[in-house]
Amino acid sequence: MAEFWNRRAVMLAGGAATLLAGRAGAVQEPVGQERPSGDGVRNNVSSFHMVRWQDHFDTLENGAILADTKSRAVHFWSEDESVYRLYPSSVPASDDLTKLGYTQIVRTRVGPTWTPTPSMRERNPSLPATIEAGPENPLGTHALYLSWTYYLIHGTHDTRKIGRRSSAGCIGLYNEHIEELYALAKVGTQVRLI
Image 1 (cartoon, rainbow, N blue to C red):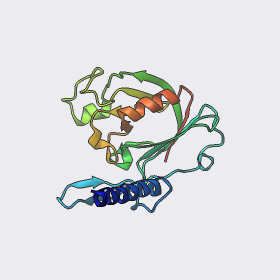
Image 2 (spheres, helix red, strand yellow; image 1 turned 120 degrees about the vertical axis):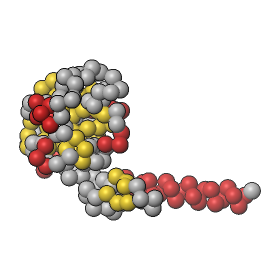
Image 3 (spheres, helix red, strand yellow; image 1 turned 180 degrees about the vertical axis):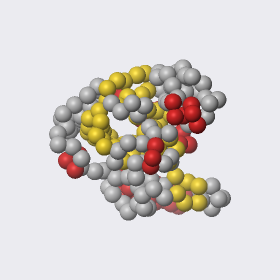
Image 4 (cartoon, rainbow, N blue to C red; image 1 turned 135 degrees about the vertical axis):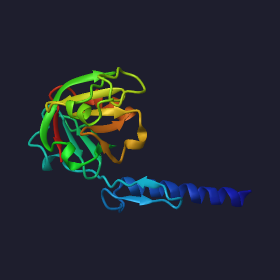
């Protein structure tokens, strides 16, 4: 029995060391790749890491959000630098579906209603005019509307999308992460998509 507990302690310590190494910046796989698992299923591979806000923003006035479409990650810094968050995200399915550059949050909403864009309706006329808040709504539980028409940072009920190129232009987060970001960000928070 003592041998079992000794092996268990070694395994637990090794697992904790691995977790800590990952948080301390262990080497990760290349950005934006997917690799097949042993059973042929494609796993999400994301290689996001902490970045400096100074490399992307002049100030942290009103806080700042950086959405990195290459590493599929969203970074948030509070105005006083006391809060930094890093979230895995979904990104546009193709480069032509999103804008890159600077914008800001102009509106926030809990329980958003989804209205397909005119180009979405043109590509797929069978789309409904709107979908009210709920489990069928592709915007998840919370949404941050950007100054660019039709572009949002929002949640998703389809967690398979996170870590993938899967959106029609928006940045998607797990519902629990958008809920946290929603509480941290505000109208006027600066946003940059790279």
